[in-house]
Length: 368
Image (cartoon, rainbow, N blue to C red):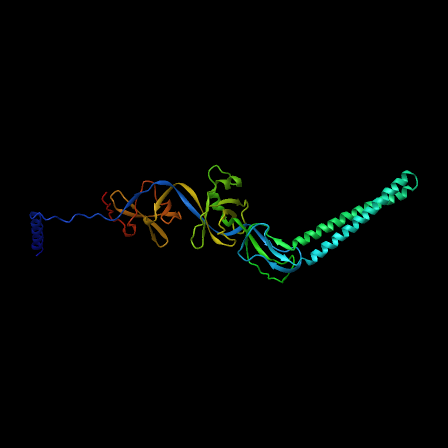
């Protein structure tokens, strides 16, 4: 029976050839390959950050009194020197008037003491009065002069206190929350508002000691902070919504001491804020790109995840694929990995279709 079947199959094949019927050809697979090589790549480092105004100032009164007028509103943009609050100035005005009256009295006393001293001086030259009387009148004149100086200081102090009743913006910026209301009794302990000087904003964040070492380029001394900061790239600020702030920033400070508790350094990036978009307290991400030189970079679609392992299918000389374990570093660009072990320069690996490869499968390359 087996001989009959074999003869039948042979006859069918012979007939097909005789009739010039084309046999199906081997089809090309959808696998693509890549030859591993070393190259340079920019790696984006990301840090969680919080914005802070260049000059965040807590506004408090320097005198006590009743708050008569609030001249600004929350969120308002103000300029340096602009009036913010007005405190009842009647007591301060009375103190100034009293100080000015005391000054006038002291000036009159000084003038009288001066006349007496000059008179005794003339009489002493004529040997009419004693040395004691001359010295006594001279001392009275000096005391009168000192009293005038004290009265003038009191007038100036009263003027300053009167000026304190009008509270102005120490810097240009944005008004924060105003917890007080007209009529409230305020004192130097009362916080009236927070003024954020937002023409320039600082994004503050922590970086690990290991990352700082990675930032240091060849030939740059890590202890030379000025040189290190100058070598750092521009930074981008990405808000929580994913919106990228249009203006670039620069690192302006980096603490030279590692925090023993966190093992990190504190960095500060300065961002210009001409449109006033950034405000104190905003959270987001600072992104800085650093160059990794002479590293093996492969596309992410070449890596197959298998539980806790990462594998890449390497193509052997006979065009079959074999799985190799690799260790890698994420580039952060969403498309590439840096291979740190498992592959060598010149290895050919499967990229597109790697998830469909099985061990020992022959890899057919697409037609060129």
